[in-house]
Every structure is written in C-alpha cells, then in structure tokens.
Image (cartoon, rainbow, N blue to C red):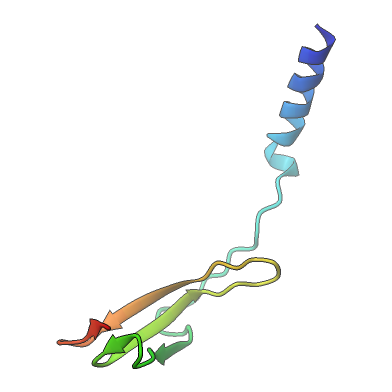
Length: 75
C-alpha cells in the first residue's frame, strides 16, 4: 500500500498548477513582427514570411505565417 500512496503524492506534486513553470506570453500588434521575402530556391513568385514565434534558449521550434501573391507557388 505504501508505494501507491507515494506514487499518488508524487503525482499530486507534479500536477499542481502552482509548481508548473510556463513560458512568458508575449503579445504583439499585427504587422509589428519581423517579415522577410522567402528565398527564390523554395518558391516561385513573391512570397513573404512573417515570423510568429522564433526559438529562444534550448527551444528549436519556430512558427511563421506565409503569404503568397497571386500566381506564387512552392518550388
């Protein structure tokens, strides 16, 4: 019975929202984030990429919004 109680106590500590560490939320106005023209080797036509999230610290994931002008396509 003791291992079950210990496991339940550990689960309660790990699932407690007060001990959870969440990254800071950053709010920015539309159009205020960095954007750039996508490389020609990946797209045909004019394509713009607006970065929504860039990796910081140990994070490796990023997110962006890609806008295609009429007739633009992926290469």
